[in-house]
Length: 162
Image 1 (cartoon, rainbow, N blue to C red):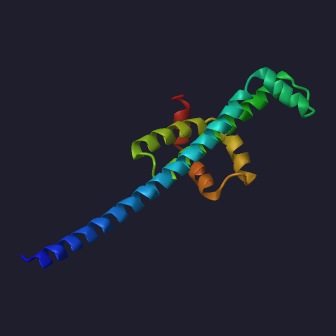
Image 2: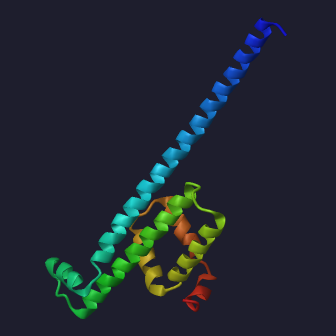
Image 3: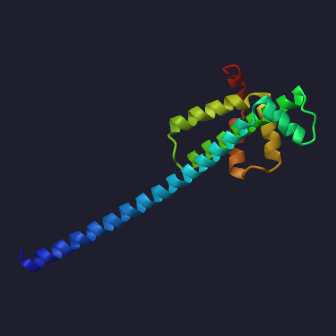
């Protein structure tokens, strides 16, 4: 092997290494962007959940109700608290949907969470809240289809487990 042959071989080898490095860098950049989007989604969900849970105490609900021109009766307070619980559940389902769509959850974890939400959706109150929420067009079509897929005839089986 001559010096020229060795030089040609090393040039080809370094070209291959550069190409492989660029491919790896592209994959890593794509993964980093995907994880950044997931963190932003989780942050938004956490922020919304913190707001809704922070408004849950009866005196906060009463203040909200009164400020909106309604007498804060016990019934109105409980209705408000229930609505806040429902919004929190919907936000959690949306986060689950987004993370699964982004390929960030294992199949086992995803199915366990879906089972939890099937159980919650087996309750007539949350199911009715979801139906109203869905019908007002507040959710994206694919997310709507996901939640609707959790509501099946089998969903009522979960009501007895909770």
